[in-house]
Length: 140
Image (cartoon, rainbow, N blue to C red; front, side, top):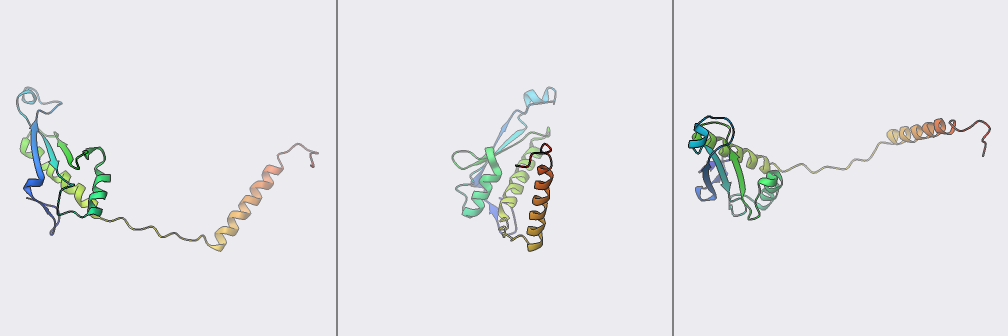
């Protein structure tokens, strides 16, 4: 079981891990030992996450979100399989915690009267500068 917050946890049936050979440096170890972890979380079927959280999670996950509604996280930073597994689980937890926070609704504000006056005055002044750029004697 993976705890996200004090109230939200993810059951073991929602997670599946597969271990593959990692790429990059590591000498002979990289050719022999499957240390990289591929963690799959069935987000769409999860009963612990609400529809709003799932929608935000899908947006945050980006291309890690599969067509069947799962999130795939890969970890291959260290040479230790256990540490990579830990890192993948922690990354998933961070992703879900970020999706739990609902964004604040933006409240549209009206420009103040002073800012409107300053804007119009600046436009008039700019127009006057551009009007002076014409050829002398062009008073049409």
